[in-house]
Image 1 (cartoon, rainbow, N blue to C red):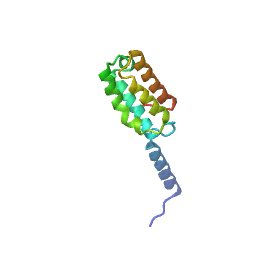
Image 2 (cartoon, rainbow, N blue to C red):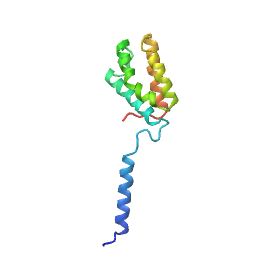
Image 3 (spheres, rainbow, N blue to C red):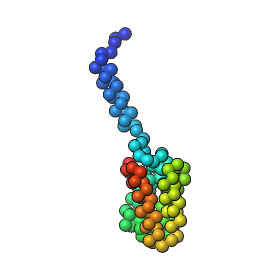
Length: 120
């Protein structure tokens, strides 16, 4: 058997480290648990589908309910209390006034961003 040189082992170790770094979970380095990160990601995707925050503010109650349903499962499984609470508040604003809905959206977004969320 041929022995590996020190440089070959070093290159292999560096390649393995880079590969593992590339596989890092997106919530690592944030104050979010896995499900909290997914809830924030679902929220960001919902905003994108709505056409951005300005258009999301204008959603009608049925559209709001659909928006909230998109992040309900992940936020319900999250152990990040700020995300769970913000999702509950957002859900309660579905049938409320436009200003309460807007406040719910803004609160959820702020909670995600304050905990280090960056959309994938």
